[in-house]
Image (cartoon, rainbow, N blue to C red; front, top):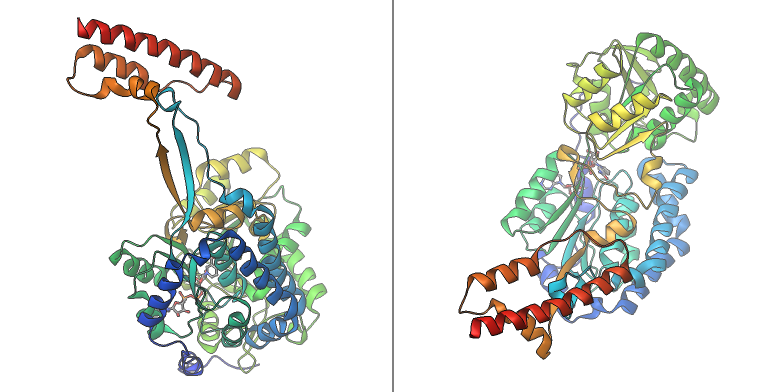
Length: 518
Ligand code: NAD
């Protein structure tokens, strides 16, 4: 176990040099991808299905290589990699394949009386050439779930893995082109310089997962081209525990959520808010559970990942100086190991409360009651998730009604992410937009509205009051016709009424036209 050193590291620069682009300049890559889009290939739903099936096959045929790459980058256990990368990816693709035919159908929204004889449709169009940039902490699924969504919606996608998880980036660069059409879905690798160059290009949509700081750079670059964005960002997700919670289950669920990927998870509980008496019970349970899970010497456990690089390792060690260590505190610089650590006596203005921790360190801040906890959360930027452990309905309602966050999870951690019928995304500093399941398809879909009219004489007759010469009677008639009415209770009844109203209106028009003519 080593001491804190302040060595400047150059790991990321080395990684950049590993991943020289094989596809030409960024401008050329984007131009080639744009002509692939203009060929119309990706608009064909059967083509999209084939690509998604291929992506599924990649995860079937190269499971061992994937587990190996994740182990090399993060020393992650096979169980974690299988569940949080491979299964998430495979299930996401299956969900799209099962539902795609339904999702791509044009929607037929409700018509008003005015449009009774018209076609009113919403077509699901791809945006065009999309840029998807992934993060290193879940380097496959955070990149390829949005890529699958963009493919399903009919876009061409430029795929940019994170350079920090170098082995996963190499896997993607080597294997993805063997499975996907590389004209439509090229992979571009690199670090800050390459990303900066890439962001100068014009895309039709940009999807970024990463920090709030870089999210702002991406947003600014996209604004220059008026390109819509989804920004999946980070922040500090709080976790409030009250005395009604089952402390053993709470401790297990909090620790599991904090320690998968050793806390390098955007939705990990970042810090705990609780009373002094809850803190004592929580720490007692955590001490027992950590011993059960990882033994007397957690460094020897196969089940704990390592910190991704020295920059982050040193940063987290710095944050561990806040408050006092109640549990853990050991580390080893050579293997970038940090023991699961709980800090007490932490103050709101301590360094650890100024940035996302992204490591296995859990500070506890004491609050007297639920109102103090809510005030504390509301005094900061809206987080990606708020976790609440309480069986009190009133406390649950207070949290739902009086706080703001991308999502809220009651009496568990992380599991909200796995529910693919829930949108996933942040709000304010934690992000813009959302995805997962159908929400992913919708994110990459431009909803193009279409009104189709015929030259039907009755239709023209009904609409002719809009033409000059204008008159008060025509104005009254058109206002009555256009007036928004409460939706009818059921489909058939509403259409029957609409037909009746239409015929009535036709008579009215006839009457007023004759009057105007007199
Ligand atoms: P990051 O923002 O530091 O880097 C992301 C990518 O941006 C890098 O791979 C790099 O290529 C590029 N980049 C970095 N600096 C740049 C600059 N100055 N100009 C242009 N491009 C630049 O994020 P990260 O370290 O890869 O990931 C960690 C962050 O991501 C955490 O904040 C975490 O909460 C967040 N995150 C969010 C989600 C989510 O779904 N909301 C998921 C995972 C991670």
